[in-house]
Image (cartoon, rainbow, N blue to C red; front, side):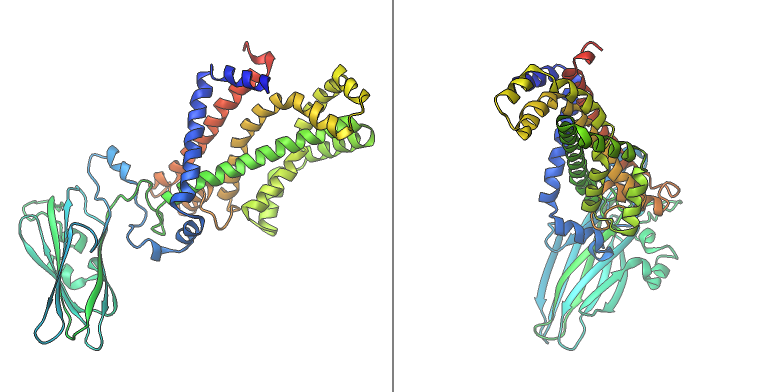
Amino acid sequence: MQALKSAFRQLAGYPSALLGGILILILLGVGIYAPIAIPYNEAIALWRGGEEHWRQNPRNVPPLWYNWFTKEALPISFQYTEADENVTRTDTPRENGGTNTIITYTFDFQADKFPQELIVYLKSDYATKKPFISFTWITPDGREVRVTDLGITQSETYRFGQDTKLQRRLGGLPANQGLFADPNSEEVKPLKGTYTLVMDALTFEDGDTIVSSEFVMHGLVSGWFGTDHFRRDLGVAMLWGTPVALAFGTLASFGTSVVTMIIAAIGVWFGSWLDELIQRITEVNLVLPFLNILIMVGVFYSRSIWTMLGVTILLSIFNASIKSYRAIFLQVKESPYIEAARAYGASNMRIVFQYLIPRIIPLLIPGLVLGIPAFVFLEATLAVLGLGDPVLPTWGKMINDANNNAALYNGFYYWILQPAVLLMFTGLSFAMVGFAMDRVFNPRLRGV
């Protein structure tokens, strides 16, 4: 333990190790935050639930920070409900029964491009007569545009872009352009300023009411990570991909490294046919096509991440490290303190676990740390090949979805670059710490 403490104090003298450690702490923080912010069942429901969970999001748009790198400001998506401060509602009883409800949505528009779509979602409660609503659009220069008049059902969705009558009133322009167009400009460009949408609703019987309303604008940027072809917020996969990647990489690396070392120690100590068997199994395993076997398991058996993790550990136990550990254990086995332990009657297992293995733990730690990004990339590779866990949202699944939807050809670079950057970020952080550990724990490398 004293040797380990001394080694970690030396590790603090390497700037790369400090930087890598900070990056790992950031990843661990995100990995802890993700299941707290979005519990597992909720994350699965959001990712697999389809567009009904993401109706407030536009389809295939980049994240908010994309605006930092463009000359023209792109409109930001928003969703206004009656709970928001820039939404007002007044309900006035009518003499003949029913209620006159006026709901006003006010928002500031400062973009240089037009939004994708405008949508209003309504829910009403009535006995026999449908409520009647009318929408009025008020522009920053004071113009009032009649949008529509219609009777609504208990659950109504009005899409401005699908109203052909509105398009004719706007001179043939689509609603997402005509409602924002500057009338004093020769070019069709948006008029910046404060817009207001006024909804005037009438119900005709006592007890009838407009239960709720929601105004959504699908802009050209949305969220901190953008959206995909299902309108899903990619932040779900970016966040949840972190704990999944770290858990898979850490468990696989730790399980493989520890079990490999134990097998090598047992083989050296007992020797004879057991050592020969371990060496032959290792030699056979070294020539097996590792990735091909994982692909076969995913295709013919199960793509569960836990199944893949178990198979990965089983296939990685008998790797080339066994021969390296064997060479070290053969030297340690002849040490005087081992002879002393045998002399006072220490059992075989006691010698293996308390005298042999502890001597090479310092050599195990760098390899364990360096193995984590390798297994993280392995999990992402399987997902990119379409063999990832069908339930979990991960970085590899994001890249796979992007590839299947020709993201690079359609200009959706953010869809692939974001998870790819996080994969490189993870690999770099563990590599910096692992190589520094290798220099500290391996005396032959300290002067390199």
